[in-house]
Amino acid sequence: MIAVIGEALIDLIVDPEGQIDTSPGGGPFNVARTVGRLGLRPAFVGRFSADGFGTMLRRVLNQDNVCIAVPEPVEAPTTLAVVEVDRDGLAKYRFYLDGTSAADLDRMRLSAALPRDLTAVHVGTLGLVMEPIADSVVSVIEDLPGEVLLMADPNCRPGAIRDEKRYRDRIARVLHRADVVKVSAEDLEYLVPGVPPHAAARTLLEKGPTLVLITEGARPARALTADEELEVPVPPMPVVDTIGAGDAFGGAFLSWWAGHGLAASDLRDPVLLRQATAAAVEVSALTCTQPGAEPPWESELAGRPGWEWLAG
Image 1: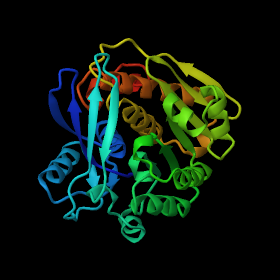
Image 2: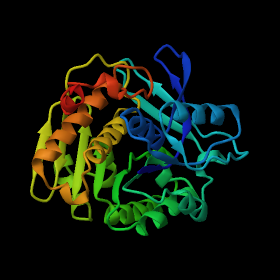
Image 3: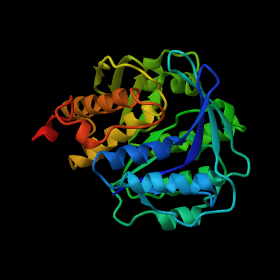
């Protein structure tokens, strides 16, 4: 089973005219929904509020075939993100974190919530920033059995990071254990400032992971290992917004990999990497055609690049 650890929150989406819409969100939450919609049943390990937003978030996961590993709600209000979308569909984020539900998960509760039949774990975004969940996540993943594939998506949010040194130390520990790291060009600029994306990704590889996946909007996605580097073009799509596109990419890559029964030991196979990256690109691009973080369902992908096997 795949476990996705981290935050669930509500996106307050502000369009260029100032109109506001609400949408379920949070990087790990979006990853779990992607995996669930692609035919697997992941476990989401995160905290929910007892308020109305928390009820909505749990309902969405149930509808998307996701198991809620920590069902007990807390009284703290749901975490919020204000997402300002410009006329090109690009999103800028601001967060309301203090005293909210997503942070409220300690190591003991997190560890107890992990499924016993784990094959892969995904961590990232504010789940590596907020306390106490962030230090709990790092502690738990360091104790994972070696055969459990770990995928990390820092999805860096500088505006939410209050202790940069502590955050960078935490990321270094995650990189040391991770098998796959998914980053955007913006993540690389934050993590390895002043260095071109390709060189920055190589720096991350030296810290532990077998594979680094890079997304750069409409530019080709890249997959780098110590011995291989490949590019997969992004298909042209009408972009409504980019909310959740990177999360959908990561969730799709992990779903494809796990769905084919592959392990961390297979990550150096260039043929498999190209197929999995193409599958992730397709899901990410389709997510951009819908408002908010709404990844496609498995039934929408049959015959598309990387998903040809579904047609049979």
